[in-house]
Image 1 (cartoon, rainbow, N blue to C red):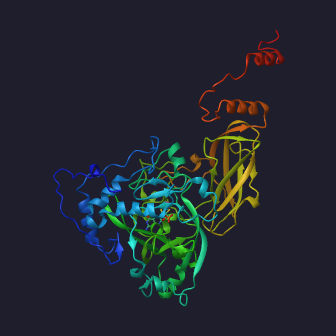
Image 2 (cartoon, rainbow, N blue to C red; image 1 turned 45 degrees about the vertical axis):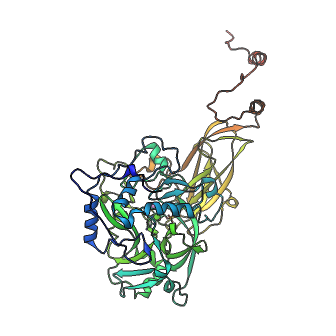
Image 3 (cartoon, helix red, strand yellow; image 1 turned 60 degrees about the vertical axis):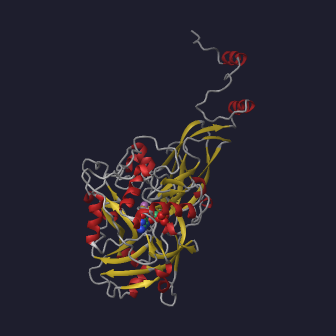
Length: 522
Ligand SMILES: Nc1nc2c(c(=O)[nH]1)N[C@H]1C(S)=C(S)[C@@H](COP(=O)(O)O)O[C@H]1N2
Ligand SMILES: [Mo]
């Protein structure tokens, strides 16, 4: 899907269009322009971007989300790519082709470009291992197409022997033992929609995608521990404390261009919790998930699991890349548009304990016989794992423990799926709540409000849904259901009036007589 010609960005008054050409850096690497090595090229790109008036991001927080799929289009990011000339112009269209080729047909395309998508909630909660087709995608730019045979990983900065590795070299088991782990990757945007609904926040330069509960997935990743690769470079020089990962695509922020860059502390790498992975669930990484090589950082925010990884730099301090320094910050609730600064939020690394109810859906009408089946996921990062899941049917006063046998396998770095047949006697609207406890006895904040933050990250409060409970073991309820069926109707939508009287007159008379009338005795 190319950019609609009516959406071409107009030039600012007095500006003229000139030919631009930023050649690709390497043969066999399409969609990759090297920016970080060439400050003058970056300056030139910024100059070109400043000539145009780009479309403003759409309002999507204070109004209902469009009922379309893709939900949001991302025209502004398509425009940025268009004005960068032939090398990046077609990247939005090619990225969309990759989505159609690699992802499940029924993905919820939260944002078309840069592509952000999550799978249907029922399917995500069905399989302990998320399939490659269903795994959520979070992109900040286009999807580069890199030829594995032409691929090299550069390692530089404060390492004793800077060098490059081909994919074959990394895969040589006589040099590097292979490491394979079940690891959950969770985007810090998961469940953001709940924060948006209650209190909107920063839309940021890149639209902060209105994620539901599906920006999380669990897969088996195979590759080599970064610790071993650093060792093969003779180790780190004194003072090196962070490893920066650079991804090949172009990232636009506030009129500047970058390659995607993030970092993790060396301490994290030393624990063999940072994998350079080329395989996802036993298959080569899909293009959309970082082919041919990505990092997988266990227990951290998804943003550090850098896709299309081509360079690693050992640094004294965290990466200066905007994704590390200016995004993924966690602010106090009194910080917002009026006073936020990059230095006033802390940098999110470890993911906290969280969970979500995947079925039933919010506002569902459920006919049951005293039990409602609830299914969901539970996860904890930062070296912790989910131990127990509790579910409440009354907004969080009485909690039922999900039996351990209803929870999937416990892994050090993976989520657990769970289900419970929740005892429900009450009828009408109920608030069902889920919370997880991890092995360090951490649990989730009570309400969205308890943990709201301006950048709308990490919605880890207890997950709450409202359902309309219809307990058919009650005679009156069973009778109403039978009547509805006779009329060829169901209960839904509950907002539609009944097509018949609630009670025949003779029954009304008999019942009011039994209850000794409407009037007081005297
Ligand atoms: N190069 C690059 N790596 C990236 C990103 C990106 O936009 N570019 N997005 C990050 C974010 S925010 C997340 S949540 C994860 C998502 O991984 P996935 O798309 O494979 O599910 O990738 C991370 N790695
Ligand atoms: Mo993310």
